[in-house]
Image (cartoon, rainbow, N blue to C red; front, side):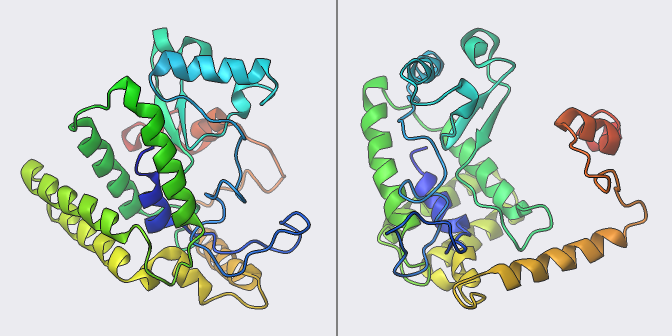
Length: 269
């Protein structure tokens, strides 16, 4: 949460919105790094979550439901969501996984996210786990600062140097040392170099690359071109998945059963 502004910078991929997205009177004066990750224009709830600990997290969501800030706990769309069988039992049953909403879909990937992005998130998670935790009294202020930073980065011109470039480079330098200490391997060393290059040369960020494809204030032409290429490639597969052809709405468990024979892990296929 404290460094989600860095993820917005490195992986933001929503520089504009299509026609009729904005409310009357709202308009971008230039493309941005991530419209979706902006609190002003993006998608999310209008209340501040509490990440001090799991108990505070659930208590804040419960109060929001009572105050009708959100209708149900499932409507909470914070940058990070704790996921388990039931939000009310997270403190006792544990968190099964984290849902990260501070990422835009990457149109240059067949599945919406690149392997390098996943590796960087894994590296960050590992680095933070090995770092001293914040005192509970520091959490609210730290996240308030992070929110302001994220809004700055999200609404910056993606083709120009970020106001937070020095802070980004500072963290990346720490990650370089960390990668060497844990001997993560050459793929992580190369990844860190690539991320540093994105900070130093903004035109290499996803959003800046998308700006090149804007035509008549729209990315529709580019999006359709990519979609058709992905569809063509998928249809050339030896065993294409055709269960969506009848417009069926499949649950995650149904997809898991049909594609992976009951488990996400390759060994269980």
